[in-house]
Length: 419
Image (cartoon, rainbow, N blue to C red; front, side):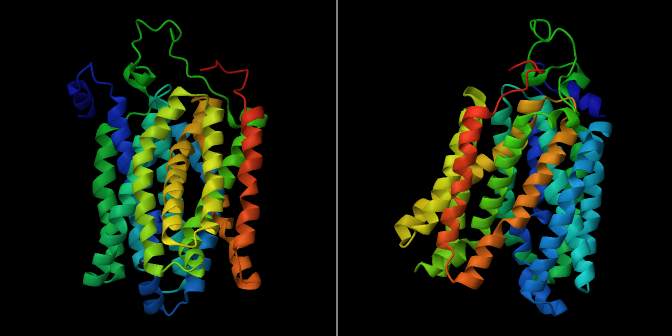
């Protein structure tokens, strides 16, 4: 059946854009494993199970950290079996994980449930979707990634209010059953019918390049370093430092935005409402960021992203009125657009597509570790110093250091054909 569906598509339309739509749905469906969905469940779960917010946060952080170290293995499975088969299995298990989480009756079950949701949702589903799009696009990869990443913004807009409605009407346990079943309905048939691992598997080339007119790619060889080769490149460690810092500092701002702004005289309602401003800015700027990646030297675009990260960190420390807080929210939205686009873009750009799963999996692990550890310095400053502003300003130095490394030392490996 899937062969017939593929044949129905006009030869003048590049099938890779169908793959982007599939991946967009996948990023959306990762919502049950994302922080913005969990946020509405903390209160009901704590009340029902008699757990404090600190206990729930501890379970969440521990599970996230453990899940991070498992992602390289998922990357290897994607390399071995292909993204399509792997994502089908991941989607099925993610649905089961949602139902298991809804059945949690104690701290241990909650922690295990968090682990499954973070690994298969926030980790594996996003990893597999980025792999699919990376395989189908080369010179248009940045724009394709930005369209894929819009699924995250749609999830932010739909999953929290939908979950809150389900909690109010049916309780938090039933809400998780609904999330699990909806994951199966959305992802399993879509992946089964519409997903193909690579363009070469259906006699195409990335970006829809015509094989007959393409002299450079006169064979179907897919280039790429394996993980051990990538780990011998200094570019890997510059990218790792960049992605670790970006994930760490973006998560810190997500986690403490309301706390920091209210300590500076901004009302809690206005501070919370700024997430909407950031989400709108993120959606508006994502296609622009994608085009920048496609049309300008990658290291300079990454450097711009790091500088925006620096501005986001600094601007929240000066947000003492609503005008400056609004400006911070806009910069933070642009920061999110850059981070969501780059997470799937940077690894194939520098290390090729042949062993992309294992390299992306390792990269995703580094980012998730950063996200897990990121809030700790600011939390320590709030609890023991009483003021987080100085700590945030010191942290803002990190992206400036990586900017220098990115501009002057981030190079494409000489063993790969340069793009």
